Image (cartoon, rainbow, N blue to C red):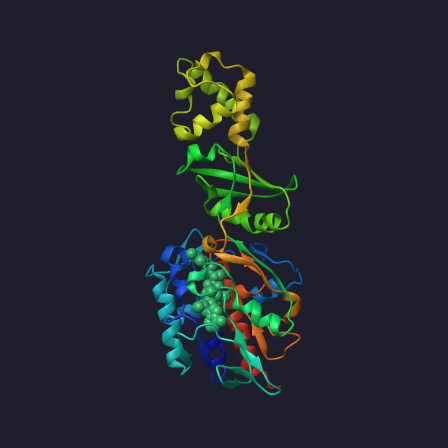
Length: 391
Ligand SMILES: Cc1cc2nc3c(=O)[nH]c(=O)nc-3n(C[C@H](O)[C@H](O)[C@H](O)COP(=O)(O)OP(=O)(O)OC[C@H]3O[C@@H](n4cnc5c(N)ncnc54)[C@H](O)[C@@H]3O)c2cc1C
């Protein structure tokens, strides 16, 4: 939609073909229905891609978060900032879809909805889409995440048909599955946590936020932030695990000292009561079980070795990761059209006039408005370039 607007504003005659019966179905589910459409803190480090050729930074410099804010302000969207994320002041994603739809109407863009799986063909002069000829074609069909919203990987078939290289698509921003037995006991617990991801025993990176523990594994934004790398590692058969620190910003030694002081004050309690007010009781049970301590043991009988064991369980609880929850539960896709195949305006190097933008490209951002920013920026740049390309 943004690509169509950008091209039409440059004077091009534009037609948009949509598989679903309505436009922007996925946008409606973004940001819990409120649409986190960009972020005040924006740079290339918030994105993953298997190609590091500077394109992401270049694109963000040519269509920044400020450009997104101004673009939508021009369509009547008043921004509201929450934890650096930008939302429409109306607090509903419907506003974003409506604003785009109205601007398309305003510009006279032809829109066909309910088209099913649209294919792209090419003869010597033109691209052929549903029997109509076009000088340029912008493929903005999304990746494979949340296929119920319409995006189920068609863009990769279109690319491959033209001999364009596609990096394997994997689920990202997705809950992770684990076979750790103790998870069954803590299902439903949420806790502020720091997660450290390890792949083949090598530390990759950390994330902090509210962790959701489930019987199948872990979820929540801090999990999502590690999921792109975890997803790739699992697909490559690598060993993948996460350590959870349930007292973020505290080292094991600091927690040991904290527990020593706590044991002094609460010495008359049993171990079943020791963590009251510090952790959810389901979680406390896991910690004491991990250390082989009985619930009825008196706190004053705890040895320093046991306290150190508890400090270890609290700051580095081991979670082996065996899989992701798949595309149905994913918010975005890692992999897609290789950035090596595209020029700086998202045009295919092999097939001039054919552009790929948004989630269909091999770029995935973290949570917080980054994936939509990538889609808007690609739309603006490719739309403008396609309209002005005179070859
Ligand atoms: C639950 C959820 C929450 C999210 N929340 C956020 C958020 O708050 N902020 C954020 O930045 N990102 C969020 N995302 C990610 C973001 O929505 C996507 O990355 C973004 O929408 C990608 O834009 P796109 O235009 O590339 O693809 P899409 O938005 O997927 O649009 C592609 C369109 O192409 C259509 N289509 C597919 N195949 C064909 C075909 N063959 N022919 C014709 N049409 C076709 C689809 O029906 C769809 O309408 C969220 C995703 C999900 C699933």
